[in-house]
Length: 120
Length: 109
Image (cartoon, rainbow over all chains, first blue to last red; front, top):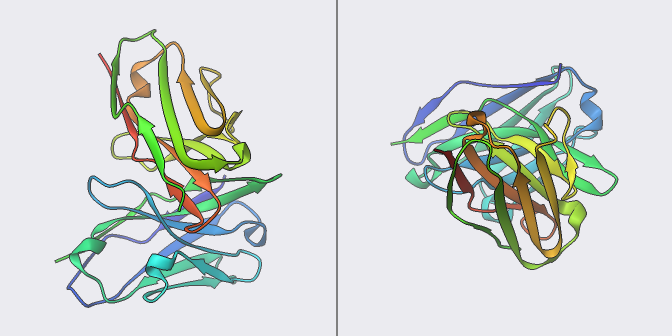
């Protein structure tokens, strides 16, 4: 079955960087993009960016443009999200989610289990 | 940026009743770009509805979506205890590419 398995929780100091991995399985990797979405305590879900499964090309939300990098390892079908210069406002659960793009419908049909990042 | 506003913030109903959740967009969006998610306590979001009205794989028929333009609705009939969750609407398009509503928390009495 389709699975997205994320790396474990992280505790970071302000100013540090964090790299979260998302290991995919159970589907043709090149046919689907992967989104990154975060959820800070008490806040709504927030889209951070997307990586193409076809060529690894990323697309970032303007808010994170200057300090996020999303990369892809096609040999292991793993996607990575690297967020730099962390502040306490980055404390959140980070999710990877497969993009469902069918006939002009856009949503996220499979989600990872989430990775808690605490900045303190 | 398209802002999604959900109402009510909290809904408390009894088993067997029908829940009606609203999602209003700050500007008109294509119905194809509207989705609904369920997030049970301690779990990741789960896709319920995409394209405003198409149920995702494995979603019970009790869940239905409708709407167009700026007003969209998620209806959950015959409520069950397992429906306790926060429900989010999501739209695609513009900048940022995806935005979400603030969520409606559904409690079962």
